[in-house]
Image (cartoon, rainbow, N blue to C red):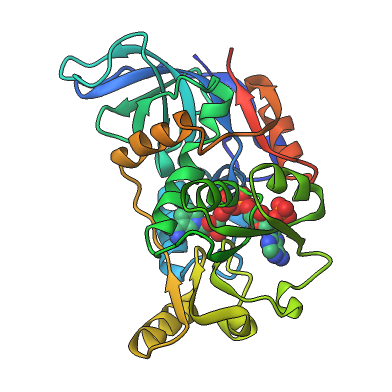
Length: 332
Ligand SMILES: NC(=O)c1ccc[n+]([C@@H]2O[C@H](COP(=O)([O-])OP(=O)(O)OC[C@H]3O[C@@H](n4cnc5c(N)ncnc54)[C@H](OP(=O)(O)O)[C@@H]3O)[C@@H](O)[C@H]2O)c1
């Protein structure tokens, strides 16, 4: 089968199309013919993982070390990227009961990666579900990672209709799903913070207000929020605690030991709290997400798609700062 492979870490050019062995499903696995896979944060990070020092990594040292052991220190051990996908079941192992040949599915393979290829095997009890009927393969492939993260982040808090929530990093893989769920599912007043090029994109997803981080520091406006969610760990509690309502929470999706210690300290006293969020994806989440898509609570906005042989071009575009939606690799 054809796959976009990388055998050394580096810039987008390390990705090249090549023939690799087609996987065959184990007794409990499904073989999926991949139709679409987006370029997400993990893809660009892992492609260049050699250059990522513990300092540049957004999570504690231990996570960096686990990442290095899993993905390889000097050379990539996992050579096919792609952690989300949508496609069609081509074959099933003899013990599989949830799926059958011809099912249209979408899913998240996480750090196992492997979706930049014509075929992929997933355990039937992995994070894979029937694709929402209302979405194309491209649209569906763009949903799982961000939606699973967003769903689990919002489960950490009690967000009520009309409450104010600010999402710092609203335009990446996780932010757009947080914006949509906070607004459509919980009826919150959503402020999205992102770069200039993506303000309109975030408005189109339902944000009540958008702030360009390159032009304005939201803490200076005097506005206060019940919840602030920081995707990349760019904020500090001390910097934005005056932007929190009394008993408001700041949630760090990326965090270091400092934020973990702040979480412990603030959990003891009443008042404003720090919450570090760690998400453990589950198959049930994706079934819930499918329903949210089909009831119109989640949509995808695709900016550009690229065929598999142009995966390097897709990465270059995703990293250019120009994208205004998801960048998808298609395997027609
Ligand atoms: N805790 C967990 O369980 C968990 C799980 C998965 C991932 N993560 C973490 O989540 C992060 C990736 O999230 P993602 O996939 O959404 O990333 P992403 O796709 O790279 O998006 C990053 C977002 O941050 C924005 N941003 C960049 N610089 C900013 C700044 N100075 N101020 C405010 N916003 C800024 C970007 O805006 P523009 O693009 O508009 O400039 C974009 O909206 C990683 O750090 C990863 O470690 C955590």
